[in-house]
Length: 151
Image (tube, rainbow, N blue to C red; front, side):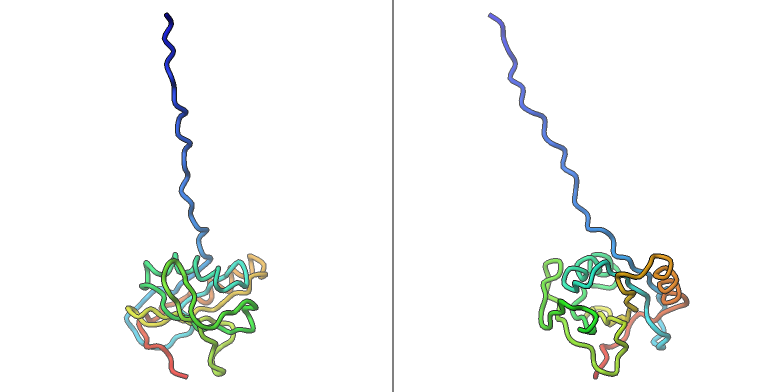
């Protein structure tokens, strides 16, 4: 009598899914509270703020603490949602920009570490131009902790 060995199929290797890194350039952090311009630049891939905040949060939450509040210009984000978004399993409040703030920037707040001001490079910008803008916005030292702006 011949014995046949029953072989079970080998498990399919599972590759972890990683969100593509946000295209982000940040200033070197100092303890100064002096206002020296933006804290860096962000070059989102799309104009979908809800989607893009997930990738941005993946990078910034470990560095700055969980993002809890965002102020952006609705004109530059067609699918702009005002209110609360779920970003990476936590709530983020999203508001319109105050009229006196730069419309080409986004403000991000972390309750544990203050707020940051990032220049937003428009998604369709050519790579060489985006690289120059991001380098300029992130050159020199930036301040780390600031209270959320009133306005």
